[in-house]
Amino acid sequence: MSYDVSVIMPTARHDYSIMGMKDIHYLKPTLNSLCNQSFGDFELIIADGIYERRSVYHDFSKMPFDVKHVPVHPNHRFWLDRKRWAVCGTLNTGLIHADGELVVRIDDCSEFDEGYLQRVWDGYQSGVWPLAMHIRYLEGKPARFDEEYRKKGYEAKYSEMIDKDRRFNILNRMYGEGGIVRDTRFPIVERMGGKMKAPHDWMYGYSCFTLEAALKVNGFDELFDGDKSLEDVDFGSRLDMAGYKDLFTLDVDHSVIEHEHEPIQEDVIERGLKPIKCNYALYLFNRYNMRWRANQTKLNQVDLAMIKKETLKVPCVPAGWDEGKQFYDEDCEGELFKLWAENAPVFDLRMERFDLY
Image 1 (tube, rainbow, N blue to C red):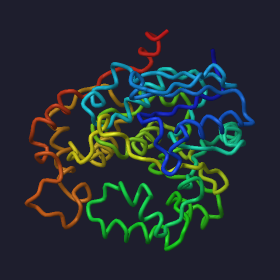
Image 2 (image 1 turned 90 degrees about the vertical axis):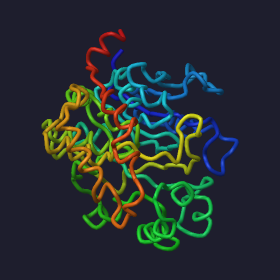
Image 3 (image 1 turned 120 degrees about the vertical axis):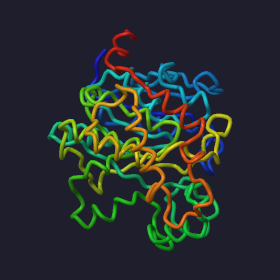
């Protein structure tokens, strides 16, 4: 069956993880708001990193739209099985199952106004790919950068920034005392008149793209897995290199609510581990080499040398970092980096889709 839109949501979160809403299942705001969409021709794909362990299942047959709740595909869970981030593998699982012309990527713990998907589709029909900006909600209301947020908010409690004081200084500059906690792109778009073309490296979070484009670039680059960051920015960059230029747009009137949530449980994704490599180095590697089609070849020694070199310098290593301490696991010389290098993913999403059916 085909659809206009496939909504893909990657997840591996426990059932009651929204901060301050302990009795609300984390899928409820998302499902309720999708039920109320004015746009109707879509499916929802929930690519679930803990599908086999999920304690609460919804009867998705009662939804007014089709739902595919699927486990992460065996070919795409190498790092997930090692309790490290596997966002790309999870998203690629969603792409394998997608039957929509347009893919709308969302995050969990999200909530949308009734016109959200219609705006996305209308934008696509006019020749652009709308991106959405988020506003954070804490305990069911807009979050503000105040004492309450500093005690409870996700960025304040669980940010992986190195220095606590530096983190709060950054957040204060971003939001201002008492300011709304929202997407950092918002004030820029507002200054540009409320609507603007977005550069490729602004493609993150709530986004859209055609299924054909995603298959052309062979999905999200799973070299980014093992660690978390920039996988969506790299995807936007590779779409740009593949010829999908000047399509991303931002509009201050196109936004999504993201409820503050607890981190993924440590028995799923371990916290406090040193990163294997710098994902910004991988982003640069793909840009320098015009490597717009991902997950096709193994890395050679020249590739690995470039990635290591970029990983071990600023900005991958924070300026002022103590040279006596290793920011990355064994400075990319240990068994973990070797495991990552030797298990670079090689697959073709088109063939996997064919095999699925």
